[in-house]
Image 1 (tube, rainbow, N blue to C red):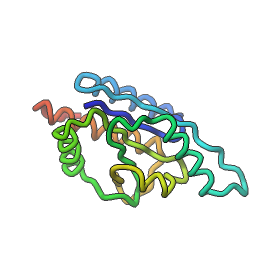
Image 2 (image 1 turned 135 degrees about the vertical axis):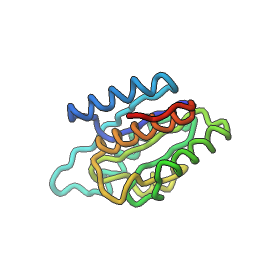
Image 3 (image 1 turned 90 degrees about the vertical axis):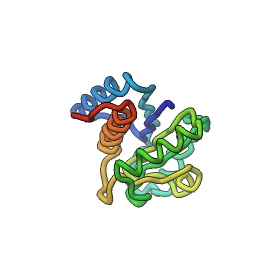
Length: 156
C-alpha cells in the first residue's frame, strides 16, 4: 500500500521540514510515502471562510486522484489512537486498497462538503494543530505502524 500526505499549504517551519525529511527516509524502507502540498488560499480581511475552504477543497479534488482511500484529519473527527489507526490501515490493506491519502486542511480546516466526500474523518487529538504539526505527527504514526507491521520494535 502507498501513502500520500496532502497538506493545504507548504511545510515552512524548518524544524518540521527536518522532522518530515527524517520520517520520509525512515518510511521509504517500508512503503512509498509522499507529501503533496496543495496551494492554500490567502486569508484576507473580509474574505468568507466558507469560500476560502471551498476553493482549497476544489484544489484538493483537482490534484488528488480517487485511486484509493481519502482520510481527512480534523480535530472534530473520529478520535484515533495508534491502535485504531493501525487497525484501520490493516483493514484497507486487507481490502487491497492501493493507496491511502491523508488530507490535512489549512488554517480554517477543510470544507464541510469535502469532509462529506472523504472515506473517513480522523482526529489526532482534540487539540488544534497547524497543518505542519499534524503532518509531522501523522508521519511518526505511519512510521510506527510500518515498523510494527514489519515485526520490528519501535524505538524512536
